[in-house]
Length: 88
Image 1: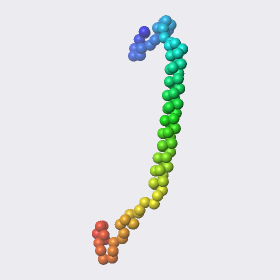
Image 2: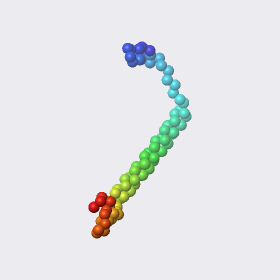
Image 3: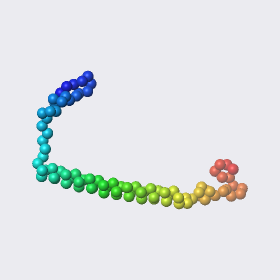
Image 4: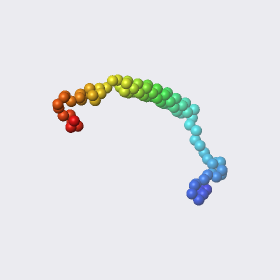
């Protein structure tokens, strides 16, 4: 392996004789089946998460749009002749 000043590099000669093992066909088929199964599982989980996200946004929007009590409903105007919290 050649090295540069700061970054290691591979020369063509380093990879020409590189032996890369390839699994037998049965093992390749098993691996491919597992990859397909996990991809399908990931798609299903993404769809489930998206559905949950849409429902959560819809729920939050409906809570924002409901009529919450106003401060004037909770703290009515002071009675005549009485002092409120602001000293009026």
